[in-house]
Length: 345
Image 1 (cartoon, one colour):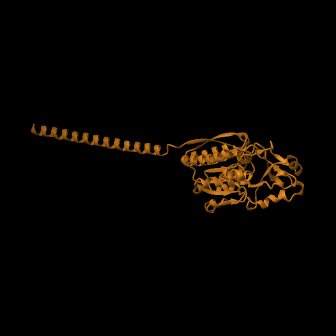
Image 2 (tube, rainbow, N blue to C red):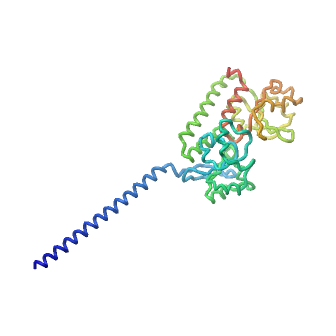
Image 3 (cartoon, rainbow, N blue to C red):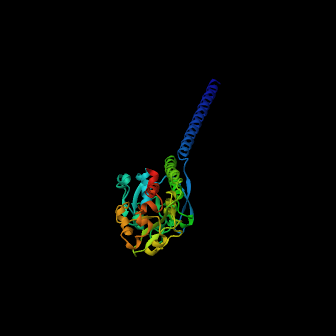
């Protein structure tokens, strides 16, 4: 009997030990599960900004919803305005390649630009772009033409996002400074730097408000022709749908040409503008120089045009006036000061 009782006691103690072991294991498992859930929650919390979706465009001007699951790390910019904007927003370390300068890089950005790989003088080939394994291509609509980099959807299929500057897409309507603000806001969302981009846009708007406060006092606003020299001796004229027209209006003047097109010397004489905004690009030459205005001042056929007689010719660069970038408000300030120096004394 004693032996049987002793055996029962042993069995009971073993059962109790086994139960305690199972409870301990169960508790340990739940702690690990809880720990894992905590880690997942923290990860989600840390990445709570993403995914983000923005509206961009294809080559035909169709709207496309583009989703970013994280901030791009390998960006290729395909024109100067996109490149300078990325550099000015402190995103130069994200650039793995760039191309296509219309004018010399801004002095304040030259050092940052020197660290970026230049792929080509104009647009790069698909092979050059693919070799760099980008996760974002940012630039003008024209880079996605069939004979250049091809349709944006082909890049999306490769896992490469695209971002097209609004002021190169005709379907958005008139090209405006407001479109530039939207591009900057998109960059803020994509790279999760909204605080910086919001402050950047606010600064641009504040500077334009200062110009508006001055030019609102004008009784007579100057009538302007916006011209770019063509190789055939005629001039390209910019109409009210172009970004530079909005810039001229914000500088306090009036663009007298409704539609973009070409204009001859005789056409300039007939228009007789108070001032000419002359857009220059190419060959790495400095754009903002009165030397370039000689295309008008040395032309005897234009000697009686008010803008030429008064030497009221404002020279600007294509990088200031096309697509929109860091130079836009600088240029508007320049136009306003040269057109109305009396307001800035």
